[in-house]
Image (cartoon, rainbow, N blue to C red; front, side):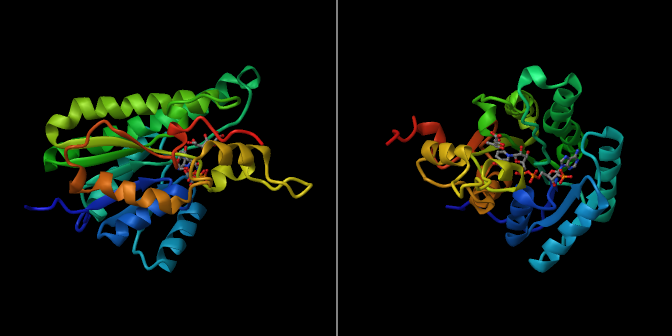
Length: 266
Ligand code: NAP
Ligand code: GCO
């Protein structure tokens, strides 16, 4: 029996917003199993920071400055990657922002900005890479969704709307392009220790853990925040031939939050 392997040897992988955080961890895992990694970030200093971090990890990555919400810039970046590296086989729509503001206090502009980065941009970048994937006869798109693709909570209305939409964009790309041997799936990380969630984990003035930190520990059977490394195996699986018949799935990597009513107080 031929075992569909998890190798990404010879594949070109674009991970957006991957100078650090979850994107950096996923791109590093791809490199470890043979992929040629390219990434973008919104500012040159971030790209430079990312290049230094990849080099320190022994990874020869290529970085591009590109705002993923700018369709012309994305189209130009993809064309440049195809000239300089090769056709993109794997896309991870990772770049994202969050604004934690009560909805009635949030401006329409702030709401639109989150939707633009977290939902419109995955549409823009996916639209830019799919034609070459069709010509090549295969492709993998992984959208980084969220627990907020399924749940709401106070202050994250824009983010939840975007990530819920990203879940359905994932399913629609799977539906529309599966016939071309393109698989589009999502990863729904639980609560992961990155700069994005740092405000939710700050030690309190009295030395106690942040109330939200304590809340997440009570809601997570694993009893801990996730690490970016927890996402590496699932990402490699969804980027590899091992998942060629997996399409439209949102794979939650959440330590069991989805299954758990929460630890009883006391
Ligand atoms: P992060 O630390 O904030 O990193 C996000 C990256 O995206 C940063 O490098 C950021 O650059 C970049 N970015 C933002 N807007 C961009 C744009 N318009 N164009 C290009 N790059 C842009 O976030 P993270 O925690 O690693 O999260 C990565 C993804 O996972 C996000 O989609 C997030 O919503 C999702 N997620 C995170 C968690 C978690 O618990 N951390 C859980 C579930 C899902 P700047 O530094 O300039 O902002
Ligand atoms: C928040 C957090 C979460 C995480 C992640 C959970 O404020 O609730 O930032 O939204 O970022 O999306 O899966």
